[in-house]
Image 1 (cartoon, one colour):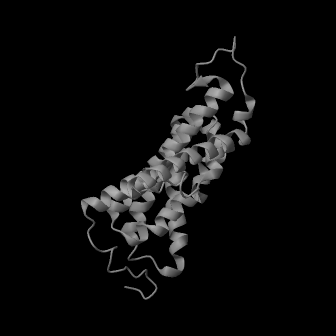
Image 2 (image 1 turned 90 degrees about the horizontal axis):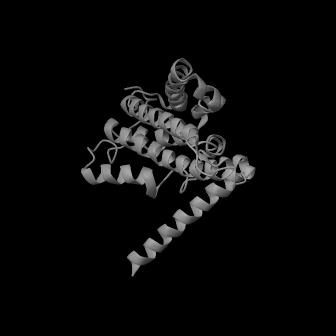
Image 3 (image 1 turned 135 degrees about the horizontal axis):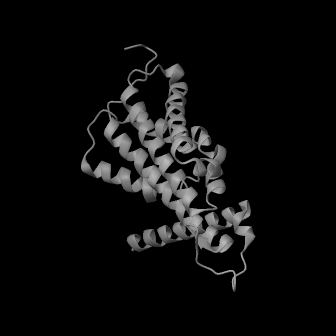
Length: 222
């Protein structure tokens, strides 16, 4: 092995994880260490695509694929990536998955591709993807790295959808394009279709989740 290759730790990276580790990794990414509510990452895309639930679902699914695939390949190649070009290789892997997804959207889902615009390509610079590759995949075996990537993607997806439900309902009176609040009696609140609406909704969601977590910690401490 080259002197410049990443040196793998004897623990925990090269030790086969047990079921508890898989469980903690999965539920951690979805909730306890959620990339948005706990780590406050990926906010740029979060602000842009949550105008509609449909857009949020597609973006969330795209991120799940990129995170899972990136973690898998980074983990498989971690012993062979020279340290001095490690981040370049990670970005190249991320970009490959993003480009493939972008082309698939253009080929089979053109309307959605137009609605998302440049935001699919911005997944390349999303700090969640690079963060999981650097913090987890580079130190752990492939299978659990895939679990970590998928869990963080799911964690991001449900936050996107939760915020989009509120923004689309209040801002447009619809959910998934179906009218819920009729314009005959409901006046659309355009503020929720703008960036401040995303900040307000996201901030309140983060506050509620953190308040629940604090309450649960206090209950356990008693």
